[in-house]
Amino acid sequence: MSIACCCPVLECVYCLACARWAWQKCLYTAGHESEHWGLATVEEFEPVPRLCRLILAVYEDDLHNPLWAPPGGYGINPDWVFLRRNDQETEGRAPPYMIYLDHENADIVFAVRGLNLAKESDYAVLLDNKLGQTKFDGGYVHNGLLKAAEWVFDAECEVLRELLKKNPSYTLTFAGHSLGAGLVALLVMVAVQNRSKLGITERNRFRCYAIAPARCMSLNLAVRYADVINSVVLQDDFLPRTTTALEDVFKSLFCLPCLLCLMCLKDTCTMEEKMLKDPRRLYAPGRLYHIVERRPCRIGRFPPVVRTAVPVDGRFEHIVLSCNATSDHAIIWIERESQRALDLMVEKDGVTRVPAKQKMVRHVSLAREHSEEHKAALQRAVALDIPQAYSPSTYGTFHEMEGAGSSGGSSERGF
Image (cartoon, rainbow, N blue to C red; front, side, top):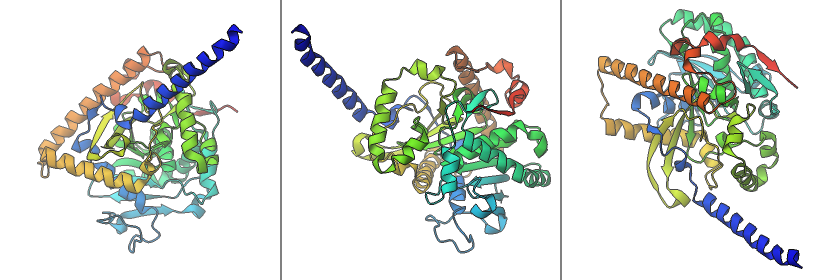
Protein backbone atom coordinates (compact mmCIF):
# COMPACT_ATOMS: atom_id res chain seq x y z
CA MET A 1 0.00 0.00 0.00
CA SER A 2 2.81 2.38 0.88
CA ILE A 3 4.52 1.68 -2.47
CA ALA A 4 1.31 2.43 -4.32
CA CYS A 5 1.04 5.75 -2.46
CA CYS A 6 4.58 6.71 -3.51
CA CYS A 7 3.91 6.24 -7.22
CA PRO A 8 1.93 9.50 -7.68
CA VAL A 9 4.63 11.38 -5.75
CA LEU A 10 7.39 9.96 -7.96
CA GLU A 11 5.29 10.75 -11.01
CA CYS A 12 4.92 14.36 -9.91
CA VAL A 13 8.65 14.68 -9.22
CA TYR A 14 9.44 13.24 -12.65
CA CYS A 15 6.99 15.59 -14.37
CA LEU A 16 8.40 18.60 -12.50
CA ALA A 17 11.96 17.60 -13.48
CA CYS A 18 10.93 17.25 -17.13
CA ALA A 19 9.11 20.59 -17.02
CA ARG A 20 12.18 22.27 -15.49
CA TRP A 21 14.43 20.75 -18.18
CA ALA A 22 12.07 21.87 -20.97
CA TRP A 23 11.84 25.39 -19.50
CA GLN A 24 15.63 25.71 -19.26
CA LYS A 25 16.09 24.37 -22.78
CA CYS A 26 13.51 26.74 -24.23
CA LEU A 27 15.30 29.67 -22.57
CA TYR A 28 18.75 28.39 -23.62
CA THR A 29 20.05 30.25 -26.64
CA ALA A 30 23.20 29.91 -28.72
CA GLY A 31 24.35 33.31 -27.48
CA HIS A 32 24.93 31.85 -24.00
CA GLU A 33 27.67 29.55 -25.29
CA SER A 34 29.94 32.35 -26.42
CA GLU A 35 28.90 35.20 -24.11
CA HIS A 36 32.30 35.19 -22.34
CA TRP A 37 34.37 34.94 -25.53
CA GLY A 38 36.29 37.87 -26.96
CA LEU A 39 35.15 39.85 -29.99
CA ALA A 40 36.75 39.07 -33.35
CA THR A 41 38.74 41.79 -35.09
CA VAL A 42 38.47 42.99 -38.67
CA GLU A 43 41.86 41.54 -39.59
CA GLU A 44 41.11 37.98 -38.48
CA PHE A 45 37.51 37.83 -39.74
CA GLU A 46 38.01 39.59 -43.09
CA PRO A 47 38.63 36.37 -45.11
CA VAL A 48 35.40 34.67 -43.99
CA PRO A 49 32.77 36.33 -46.28
CA ARG A 50 35.22 36.21 -49.20
CA LEU A 51 35.85 32.49 -48.70
CA CYS A 52 32.11 31.83 -48.33
CA ARG A 53 31.62 33.33 -51.79
CA LEU A 54 34.45 31.19 -53.16
CA ILE A 55 32.78 28.07 -51.78
CA LEU A 56 29.49 29.16 -53.35
CA ALA A 57 31.32 29.60 -56.66
CA VAL A 58 32.17 25.88 -56.69
CA TYR A 59 28.48 25.18 -57.33
CA GLU A 60 28.59 27.10 -60.63
CA ASP A 61 29.21 25.31 -63.94
CA ASP A 62 30.42 28.46 -65.72
CA LEU A 63 31.85 31.28 -63.62
CA HIS A 64 31.88 33.63 -66.62
CA ASN A 65 28.08 33.28 -66.76
CA PRO A 66 27.04 32.56 -63.16
CA LEU A 67 23.49 31.51 -62.35
CA TRP A 68 23.48 31.59 -58.55
CA ALA A 69 25.70 34.54 -57.66
CA PRO A 70 24.89 36.31 -54.36
CA PRO A 71 24.10 40.05 -54.36
CA GLY A 72 27.27 41.83 -55.48
CA GLY A 73 28.58 38.72 -57.24
CA TYR A 74 31.28 36.29 -56.16
CA GLY A 75 33.99 38.95 -56.17
CA ILE A 76 36.46 36.71 -57.96
CA ASN A 77 38.26 36.72 -61.29
CA PRO A 78 37.21 33.58 -63.22
CA ASP A 79 40.55 33.62 -65.05
CA TRP A 80 42.33 33.01 -61.74
CA VAL A 81 40.62 29.64 -61.26
CA PHE A 82 43.51 27.24 -61.71
CA LEU A 83 41.74 23.89 -61.42
CA ARG A 84 38.24 22.46 -60.96
CA ARG A 85 37.10 18.93 -60.18
CA ASN A 86 33.48 17.80 -60.53
CA ASP A 87 31.72 14.68 -59.22
CA GLN A 88 32.82 12.56 -62.15
CA GLU A 89 36.47 13.55 -61.76
CA THR A 90 36.49 12.86 -58.02
CA GLU A 91 34.76 9.51 -58.63
CA GLY A 92 32.55 10.15 -55.62
CA ARG A 93 35.49 9.96 -53.21
CA ALA A 94 35.19 13.65 -52.34
CA PRO A 95 32.78 16.51 -53.10
CA PRO A 96 33.67 18.86 -55.99
CA TYR A 97 36.36 21.45 -55.35
CA MET A 98 38.48 24.09 -57.04
CA ILE A 99 41.85 25.76 -56.63
CA TYR A 100 41.80 29.55 -56.95
CA LEU A 101 44.84 31.82 -57.17
CA ASP A 102 43.88 34.93 -55.22
CA HIS A 103 46.61 37.30 -56.36
CA GLU A 104 45.00 40.26 -54.59
CA ASN A 105 45.43 38.59 -51.20
CA ALA A 106 48.56 36.52 -51.98
CA ASP A 107 46.63 33.33 -51.32
CA ILE A 108 46.20 29.89 -52.91
CA VAL A 109 42.66 28.85 -51.98
CA PHE A 110 41.48 25.25 -52.03
CA ALA A 111 37.66 25.53 -51.84
CA VAL A 112 35.39 22.50 -51.29
CA ARG A 113 31.64 22.42 -51.76
CA GLY A 114 29.20 21.18 -49.11
CA LEU A 115 26.90 18.17 -49.05
CA ASN A 116 24.81 17.54 -52.16
CA LEU A 117 21.55 15.98 -50.96
CA ALA A 118 21.10 14.29 -54.35
CA LYS A 119 24.50 12.52 -54.32
CA GLU A 120 24.74 9.14 -52.61
CA SER A 121 28.54 9.37 -52.69
CA ASP A 122 28.44 12.44 -50.41
CA TYR A 123 26.35 10.52 -47.88
CA ALA A 124 28.79 7.62 -48.12
CA VAL A 125 31.65 9.90 -47.09
CA LEU A 126 29.74 11.59 -44.26
CA LEU A 127 28.22 8.42 -42.80
CA ASP A 128 31.39 6.31 -42.98
CA ASN A 129 32.27 6.54 -39.31
CA LYS A 130 32.00 4.54 -36.12
CA LEU A 131 32.93 5.68 -32.65
CA GLY A 132 36.66 5.15 -32.13
CA GLN A 133 37.20 3.79 -35.64
CA THR A 134 40.16 5.88 -36.81
CA LYS A 135 43.17 7.40 -35.04
CA PHE A 136 45.35 10.18 -36.41
CA ASP A 137 48.20 12.12 -34.81
CA GLY A 138 47.41 10.93 -31.30
CA GLY A 139 43.65 11.49 -31.46
CA TYR A 140 40.48 10.24 -33.13
CA VAL A 141 39.03 11.57 -36.39
CA HIS A 142 36.05 10.96 -38.66
CA ASN A 143 36.91 7.91 -40.78
CA GLY A 144 35.10 8.83 -44.03
CA LEU A 145 36.34 12.42 -44.01
CA LEU A 146 39.92 11.32 -43.36
CA LYS A 147 39.83 8.88 -46.27
CA ALA A 148 38.45 11.64 -48.51
CA ALA A 149 41.11 14.10 -47.30
CA GLU A 150 43.92 11.61 -47.92
CA TRP A 151 42.59 10.89 -51.42
CA VAL A 152 42.40 14.61 -52.26
CA PHE A 153 45.90 15.22 -50.90
CA ASP A 154 47.37 12.39 -52.97
CA ALA A 155 45.50 13.59 -56.07
CA GLU A 156 46.50 17.28 -55.84
CA CYS A 157 49.80 17.21 -53.94
CA GLU A 158 51.96 17.84 -57.02
CA VAL A 159 49.67 20.63 -58.23
CA LEU A 160 49.83 22.40 -54.87
CA ARG A 161 53.59 21.89 -54.66
CA GLU A 162 54.11 23.59 -58.05
CA LEU A 163 51.82 26.49 -57.15
CA LEU A 164 53.61 27.05 -53.84
CA LYS A 165 56.96 26.89 -55.60
CA LYS A 166 55.89 29.49 -58.17
CA ASN A 167 54.33 31.71 -55.46
CA PRO A 168 56.71 31.43 -52.48
CA SER A 169 55.12 34.34 -50.59
CA TYR A 170 51.54 33.02 -50.84
CA THR A 171 49.66 31.24 -48.06
CA LEU A 172 47.78 28.01 -48.68
CA THR A 173 44.18 28.30 -47.49
CA PHE A 174 41.69 25.43 -47.32
CA ALA A 175 38.02 26.40 -47.14
CA GLY A 176 34.86 24.30 -47.12
CA HIS A 177 31.25 24.19 -45.97
CA SER A 178 29.44 21.40 -44.09
CA LEU A 179 30.78 18.13 -45.55
CA GLY A 180 33.53 20.14 -47.25
CA ALA A 181 34.35 21.86 -43.95
CA GLY A 182 35.07 18.55 -42.26
CA LEU A 183 37.11 17.45 -45.26
CA VAL A 184 39.32 20.57 -45.34
CA ALA A 185 39.85 20.42 -41.56
CA LEU A 186 41.34 16.95 -41.92
CA LEU A 187 43.01 17.85 -45.21
CA VAL A 188 45.00 20.66 -43.59
CA MET A 189 46.05 18.24 -40.84
CA VAL A 190 47.29 15.79 -43.48
CA ALA A 191 49.07 18.65 -45.27
CA VAL A 192 50.73 19.87 -42.06
CA GLN A 193 51.95 16.37 -41.34
CA ASN A 194 53.32 16.07 -44.89
CA ARG A 195 54.80 19.54 -45.36
CA SER A 196 57.93 18.18 -47.03
CA LYS A 197 55.83 16.83 -49.92
CA LEU A 198 54.55 20.35 -50.54
CA GLY A 199 57.97 21.95 -50.19
CA ILE A 200 56.87 23.96 -47.13
CA THR A 201 58.74 24.20 -43.85
CA GLU A 202 56.62 26.82 -42.05
CA ARG A 203 53.43 25.68 -40.34
CA ASN A 204 52.03 29.23 -40.40
CA ARG A 205 51.72 29.20 -44.20
CA PHE A 206 48.70 26.91 -43.78
CA ARG A 207 45.22 28.18 -42.96
CA CYS A 208 41.86 26.48 -42.86
CA TYR A 209 38.36 27.94 -42.63
CA ALA A 210 35.70 25.33 -41.86
CA ILE A 211 32.27 26.90 -42.38
CA ALA A 212 29.51 25.14 -40.38
CA PRO A 213 31.62 21.99 -39.92
CA ALA A 214 30.58 18.55 -38.79
CA ARG A 215 32.29 17.24 -35.66
CA CYS A 216 35.32 15.51 -37.10
CA MET A 217 38.16 15.29 -34.53
CA SER A 218 38.74 14.55 -30.86
CA LEU A 219 39.14 17.37 -28.36
CA ASN A 220 42.94 17.13 -28.08
CA LEU A 221 43.29 17.57 -31.86
CA ALA A 222 40.65 20.31 -32.02
CA VAL A 223 42.67 22.37 -29.54
CA ARG A 224 46.12 21.42 -30.85
CA TYR A 225 45.33 22.56 -34.41
CA ALA A 226 43.58 25.78 -33.35
CA ASP A 227 46.53 27.80 -34.70
CA VAL A 228 45.72 26.53 -38.21
CA ILE A 229 41.99 25.66 -38.29
CA ASN A 230 39.19 28.20 -37.85
CA SER A 231 35.55 27.08 -37.57
CA VAL A 232 32.73 29.53 -38.32
CA VAL A 233 29.27 28.84 -36.87
CA LEU A 234 26.12 30.91 -37.42
CA GLN A 235 24.09 31.20 -34.22
CA ASP A 236 21.91 28.05 -33.81
CA ASP A 237 23.44 25.77 -36.48
CA PHE A 238 22.73 22.16 -35.48
CA LEU A 239 25.60 20.32 -37.22
CA PRO A 240 28.59 21.50 -35.12
CA ARG A 241 26.53 20.54 -32.05
CA THR A 242 25.40 17.13 -33.29
CA THR A 243 27.05 14.37 -31.27
CA THR A 244 24.66 11.64 -32.40
CA ALA A 245 25.83 9.46 -35.31
CA LEU A 246 25.13 11.37 -38.51
CA GLU A 247 23.61 8.25 -40.01
CA ASP A 248 20.79 8.49 -37.45
CA VAL A 249 20.36 12.20 -38.21
CA PHE A 250 19.86 11.68 -41.93
CA LYS A 251 17.64 8.63 -41.45
CA SER A 252 15.42 10.86 -39.30
CA LEU A 253 15.52 13.84 -41.67
CA PHE A 254 11.74 14.14 -41.89
CA CYS A 255 11.47 14.23 -38.10
CA LEU A 256 14.63 16.17 -37.38
CA PRO A 257 13.03 18.38 -34.65
CA CYS A 258 12.06 15.23 -32.73
CA LEU A 259 15.59 13.87 -33.01
CA LEU A 260 17.11 17.18 -31.87
CA CYS A 261 14.86 17.14 -28.78
CA LEU A 262 16.00 13.61 -27.91
CA MET A 263 19.63 14.66 -28.40
CA CYS A 264 19.02 17.61 -26.08
CA LEU A 265 17.72 15.27 -23.39
CA LYS A 266 20.64 12.87 -23.84
CA ASP A 267 23.28 15.62 -23.68
CA THR A 268 21.63 17.20 -20.64
CA CYS A 269 21.76 13.88 -18.76
CA THR A 270 25.43 13.28 -19.63
CA MET A 271 27.97 14.66 -17.17
CA GLU A 272 30.33 17.19 -18.78
CA GLU A 273 33.32 15.54 -17.13
CA LYS A 274 32.39 12.24 -18.76
CA MET A 275 32.14 13.93 -22.16
CA LEU A 276 35.54 15.58 -21.81
CA LYS A 277 37.23 12.36 -20.70
CA ASP A 278 35.93 10.34 -23.66
CA PRO A 279 38.87 10.30 -26.13
CA ARG A 280 36.65 9.11 -29.00
CA ARG A 281 34.11 11.94 -28.77
CA LEU A 282 34.41 14.25 -31.78
CA TYR A 283 34.23 18.06 -31.76
CA ALA A 284 34.10 21.04 -34.08
CA PRO A 285 37.72 21.74 -35.04
CA GLY A 286 40.13 24.53 -34.15
CA ARG A 287 39.46 28.13 -33.15
CA LEU A 288 35.75 28.93 -33.09
CA TYR A 289 34.03 32.00 -34.53
CA HIS A 290 30.40 32.37 -33.46
CA ILE A 291 28.13 34.79 -35.33
CA VAL A 292 25.25 35.88 -33.09
CA GLU A 293 22.46 38.03 -34.51
CA ARG A 294 19.09 36.96 -33.07
CA ARG A 295 17.42 37.47 -29.73
CA PRO A 296 15.93 34.52 -27.80
CA CYS A 297 12.64 33.05 -29.10
CA ARG A 298 12.95 35.14 -32.29
CA ILE A 299 11.78 38.22 -30.39
CA GLY A 300 13.96 40.38 -32.60
CA ARG A 301 17.37 40.87 -34.15
CA PHE A 302 20.36 42.97 -33.27
CA PRO A 303 23.44 43.87 -35.32
CA PRO A 304 25.47 40.66 -35.80
CA VAL A 305 28.52 40.27 -33.59
CA VAL A 306 31.33 37.75 -33.99
CA ARG A 307 32.85 36.19 -30.88
CA THR A 308 35.93 34.01 -30.93
CA ALA A 309 37.87 31.74 -28.61
CA VAL A 310 39.74 28.44 -28.36
CA PRO A 311 37.48 26.81 -25.77
CA VAL A 312 38.21 23.44 -24.20
CA ASP A 313 35.03 22.93 -22.20
CA GLY A 314 31.78 24.46 -23.42
CA ARG A 315 32.64 23.75 -27.05
CA PHE A 316 29.15 23.80 -28.61
CA GLU A 317 28.06 20.93 -26.39
CA HIS A 318 24.30 21.51 -26.43
CA ILE A 319 21.71 21.46 -29.19
CA VAL A 320 19.70 24.69 -29.36
CA LEU A 321 15.94 24.21 -29.68
CA SER A 322 15.36 26.76 -32.40
CA CYS A 323 13.37 27.17 -35.60
CA ASN A 324 16.65 28.27 -37.21
CA ALA A 325 18.73 25.23 -36.25
CA THR A 326 18.73 23.99 -39.85
CA SER A 327 18.49 27.29 -41.77
CA ASP A 328 21.56 28.63 -39.93
CA HIS A 329 23.53 25.84 -41.59
CA ALA A 330 22.97 27.25 -45.10
CA ILE A 331 26.08 28.79 -46.70
CA ILE A 332 24.03 31.60 -48.30
CA TRP A 333 22.89 32.83 -44.86
CA ILE A 334 26.35 32.46 -43.37
CA GLU A 335 27.82 34.51 -46.23
CA ARG A 336 25.21 37.22 -45.79
CA GLU A 337 25.49 37.48 -42.00
CA SER A 338 29.29 37.29 -41.99
CA GLN A 339 29.45 40.13 -44.52
CA ARG A 340 27.04 42.22 -42.43
CA ALA A 341 29.12 41.55 -39.34
CA LEU A 342 32.34 42.49 -41.14
CA ASP A 343 30.82 45.71 -42.51
CA LEU A 344 29.78 46.69 -38.98
CA MET A 345 33.25 45.89 -37.64
CA VAL A 346 34.89 48.01 -40.33
CA GLU A 347 32.46 50.89 -39.69
CA LYS A 348 33.00 50.73 -35.94
CA ASP A 349 36.76 50.34 -36.19
CA GLY A 350 37.16 53.01 -38.87
CA VAL A 351 39.74 51.00 -40.78
CA THR A 352 38.54 51.44 -44.31
CA ARG A 353 42.01 52.61 -45.32
CA VAL A 354 44.70 51.43 -43.01
CA PRO A 355 48.33 52.12 -44.03
CA ALA A 356 50.25 48.98 -44.97
CA LYS A 357 52.75 49.41 -42.14
CA GLN A 358 50.00 49.79 -39.52
CA LYS A 359 48.19 46.77 -40.95
CA MET A 360 51.37 44.71 -40.61
CA VAL A 361 51.73 45.78 -36.97
CA ARG A 362 48.12 44.75 -36.32
CA HIS A 363 48.70 41.33 -37.89
CA VAL A 364 51.79 40.75 -35.76
CA SER A 365 49.93 41.81 -32.61
CA LEU A 366 46.96 39.59 -33.50
CA ALA A 367 49.22 36.60 -34.15
CA ARG A 368 50.85 37.12 -30.75
CA GLU A 369 47.45 37.29 -29.00
CA HIS A 370 46.23 34.16 -30.76
CA SER A 371 49.43 32.36 -29.86
CA GLU A 372 49.01 33.20 -26.18
CA GLU A 373 45.35 32.15 -26.26
CA HIS A 374 46.30 28.89 -27.96
CA LYS A 375 48.93 28.19 -25.29
CA ALA A 376 46.37 28.85 -22.57
CA ALA A 377 43.90 26.44 -24.23
CA LEU A 378 46.53 23.71 -24.43
CA GLN A 379 47.41 24.22 -20.78
CA ARG A 380 43.73 24.10 -19.79
CA ALA A 381 43.31 20.86 -21.75
CA VAL A 382 46.16 19.37 -19.72
CA ALA A 383 44.68 20.72 -16.47
CA LEU A 384 41.32 19.10 -17.29
CA ASP A 385 43.14 15.83 -17.98
CA ILE A 386 41.92 15.62 -21.58
CA PRO A 387 43.22 12.34 -23.11
CA GLN A 388 46.38 12.82 -25.21
CA ALA A 389 46.51 16.58 -24.48
CA TYR A 390 50.00 18.09 -24.22
CA SER A 391 51.29 21.33 -22.78
CA PRO A 392 52.91 23.90 -25.14
CA SER A 393 56.39 23.07 -23.85
CA THR A 394 56.08 19.66 -25.48
CA TYR A 395 56.05 21.29 -28.88
CA GLY A 396 58.65 23.99 -28.44
CA THR A 397 57.74 27.25 -30.17
CA PHE A 398 54.22 27.66 -31.48
CA HIS A 399 55.08 27.77 -35.14
CA GLU A 400 57.23 24.69 -34.73
CA MET A 401 54.73 22.54 -32.90
CA GLU A 402 55.47 19.41 -34.81
CA GLY A 403 58.20 18.13 -32.51
CA ALA A 404 55.75 15.83 -30.77
CA GLY A 405 52.94 15.84 -33.32
CA SER A 406 54.79 14.67 -36.43
CA SER A 407 55.59 11.29 -34.97
CA GLY A 408 51.88 10.44 -34.94
CA GLY A 409 51.15 11.60 -38.46
CA SER A 410 50.15 8.24 -39.88
CA SER A 411 46.56 7.17 -39.42
CA GLU A 412 45.60 4.00 -37.62
CA ARG A 413 42.31 2.35 -38.53
CA GLY A 414 40.67 0.16 -35.93
CA PHE A 415 37.54 -1.73 -36.95
